[in-house]
Amino acid sequence: MLYKTRAIALSYIKFKETSIIAKLYTEEFGLQTYIQNSVRSAKAKPKMAFFQPLTLLDLVVYHKMGQEIHRISELKCLVAYQSLQTDFRKITVASFLTEIISKCVHEGDLNAELFEFLASSFIHFDKQNVGYQNFHIHFLFELTNYLGFHPQSFDELKSQLISYRTTWLNVFEDDSLKFICVSLIEGMNNIEIDGHQRRILIDMLLDFYQSHIENFGEIKSLKVLREL
Image (cartoon, rainbow, N blue to C red; front, side, top):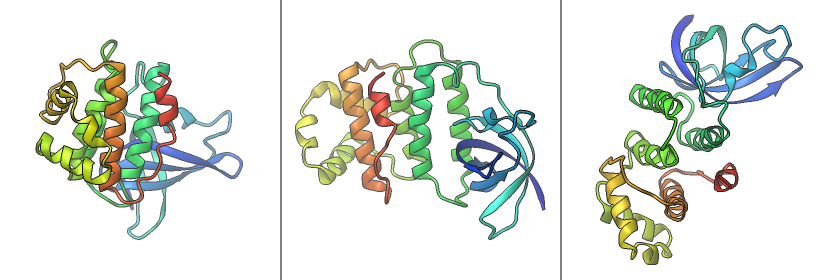
């Protein structure tokens, strides 16, 4: 049966000579796997660019409950990004966030509010010309709201991290870091974070995600992000 849905491209692998198998997070069905034929040929109408990380798509798909791989009947780009897939810094952040999202959502998990949050966040990120160096940190704090483990206070965040890794006890003695964490938990955006603090916060968030998500594992794109 045919259904219309919006989707966010996450990843793909090559399949046979010209096809791919893509992981898409859809509004109607959650995370799903699709096969797209003849997309890697020079004359292909659906271009490979449609499947680059975080591309927003408008789809008509064949969907059958219990089926592992589905097919796409029609697709088009929902939003034409201006910088998210051309600016090297944004591409690096997008790869980092794509890897994390892929570890946080599972096949068939349906969460329309999460989809809306992801879509609106990436559209906003694409439009930012300056001051986006901390976007991924704000994003990861906000994402915990939709995954069910947003810390309600600094003390809760501190307690959980120290329980996961005792070395965080010394880090939290820094008052400036405490202020930043409280601000982020409360959703404040206009806070200054320097490069050193940014590195600590990323490590903190990854440990926090590790402590809540089974088999979260290593984030391979972190090394590239560190070089920015």
